[in-house]
Image (tube, rainbow, N blue to C red; front, side, top):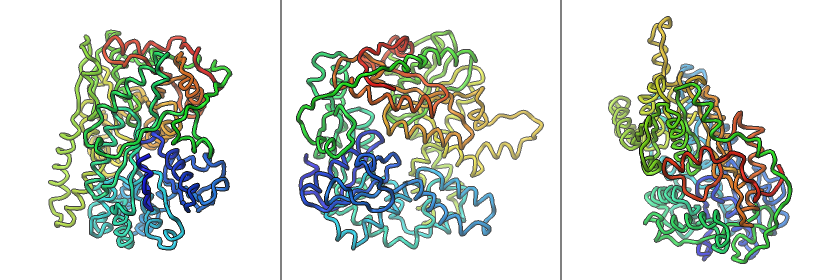
Length: 597
């Protein structure tokens, strides 16, 4: 493993959910501890299962791992950290500022940016604690801060005064309003992160085009602020021998190799390691110790039944139910890489095939709807919202209005704020709002949508919904975009996920955000399921059995409706294949699946 050569004191593992960061960081910690090093493993992943991996309770205190001498671990709860962080900022201004301003501040502090910054607040204590650094040869972090957060921390200025003067003009500066007292600590932490002799960043990916594209963006963002010592680990690559006698395994292998060959140019010059896909969940010290091994494992095949999967409705049944209304808004939501674009296209095609008018649109910069459709269909119109054009329009508007009276320092803060992920969500939502009105006469199917935090932020800071409600005669009929999203008769939100621990947890968190915004998801789609196939690959069969617990969690704890969409041999591109994808779950062939729900 190239990333394990001459390991520096600090290691950061970063990447999107579900790529294997926790397994990789735990396996690295075990390896270094067995080499006689004193190692501290720190996780801020909200889906952290470090305690489960080592079969002991860890939590928010440094805890020695009983089964690995020399290894200690710490799990920082990012939600608890964010809650405590919010209270430190909001508490002092309650009663001092108008309630409307306090509410706006609270909403600004409710999103992912606050959680990330609160986690970084915890990071810095570890990165700058001389006694702690002296006690350990290596400190390993599972989940690292983004370039956006570090850029914000590098900016000078009085965040509190800026926020109080501009409560309605910022989306991410709010979380930084309490940082001034710790600015030197943050400066020292950023310096440590930027020192290649002390810090190494490991970008973790899967052999998938969307995941590699996202990793490339992360690489460029971090390199631009001085974090240049980066390595790439492509995790979970299907071994070639699994593809020799199974058509599904052969298709997966081919797609992965094509993604690796076509990976973005900026990644090719990085030191790259490849790790093979493992059959079992990596829980326990010995299982984790095998992660860096190339040896073939004896793959146990579980036995049992999966009869409950037969009860799950087909995707076509959900489409039938959607079609009954004749028109409406259908929104596909979920994290990147779960297949929202494909499923949005499939649902739109299925509705249009029923003779219903459909407008299919996306704001995903990586989505190519025309390529996915690979043809035209009567009753189906296709469009794409250009996020960069919408962001540019929104930034210009904010700078011309909120920024016109700011001094150079305040304008610099606002410009940095407008480079945040929240900005894209707000700008895209405004573009969506222009299309939403069409849903009164036809179906509008949207791929990629803003989070509940963004919707609440818009609402709480005097966005269109509140402004309209304030100025329109209550006796007159009026409908705002927010009201349409909250109306279950007009809007159906479908959450897309995979049957894996982290994607399911992230989907549940998204559902909580939407509910906080008054939007109730209509259904969940579990995409690319191995447990809905008849694969004969021993490795894939065993992995299918591990899906069952996640599927059961979705159907019993999270979703009111759920459909299982199988992983397919043929890439679902073209009208015909998209139609097959919608109707392919009729009495799934589960002959190759093992395990018990």
